[in-house]
Image (tube, rainbow, N blue to C red):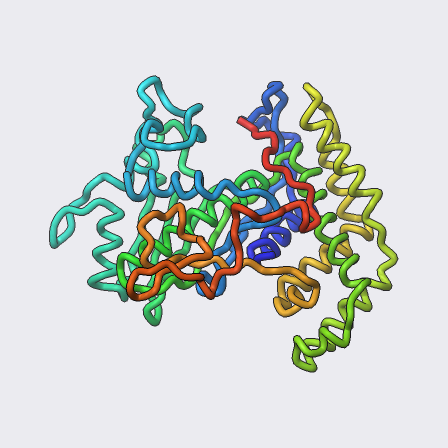
Length: 394
């Protein structure tokens, strides 16, 4: 597992437990059967990813990272607002007959403005500052331009970016007004982490931290059982592994203090008297109904409140919090955490998380910092029922 996985579960667990529901409000999104798509949300989530430590991609479920990176290249490199320049169809429903999404995203980044030393668009100006004035405190881009909102197919979700250079490392503070956590919780993190890697490469910097601020982090009602499935499946896997450990071998992996903490963690799990099978079965039966029944009516709000009050969910919360704060426990429990990095010489950014890199002569060699291959990753073997596709509210 990646640290991004634990951050993802921490966020989704918070939404399930603390989320405020909009079931009494009139909402814009609808499901394909025209039923209103309500959400549970929390305010102002800020997740921080250390890009030197790993590339932050969620491995708990499939992330279409190629389409994600294609979109960031469409916006920041092509500076396009036309879906005909995009290799996926994620924007088609908001495009006009000519393929334009209006004055959104790439259009805003490509608009030029006057500066003391010439005209620049937003992207080129950021690159100029990073190369010439990296200590500048106003390296900001903004896509939420009020005078143009009426000409946008959809208001920008990720809209503000502020860059910082500290000790030769490029950091990014990303501002997002709204995030569909199940469908896009990994998507935006992947693409803006990629952007940091690319700009760092161009400007001869090292990737630093990505701080991702989400004002409205939400889960749609019909996504709730999928989140419960992912959370409890992972907790069940860890409980099973903790119950069958060889402590003598693990002692050699950790410091004395780490081993003491780990032993306490395992002992607490063994004494939890928790069986995840029943709530997991219920969640998976709900998933099946969501996927296969039209006009499916169910009280997801009360289901969410009920499941988070169970000892099974509280045990899962404890597991997530512990694993997030104790990375050394991963190896002891038999997980192979992905360490995905950018090949500093790569030109094709679809291949930037390859387990291969190049030496100083340009020869392709094994990447010692990468032990993970997304193409061959077996999600189901990691204990989670793979859901490549979930219903999408429109």
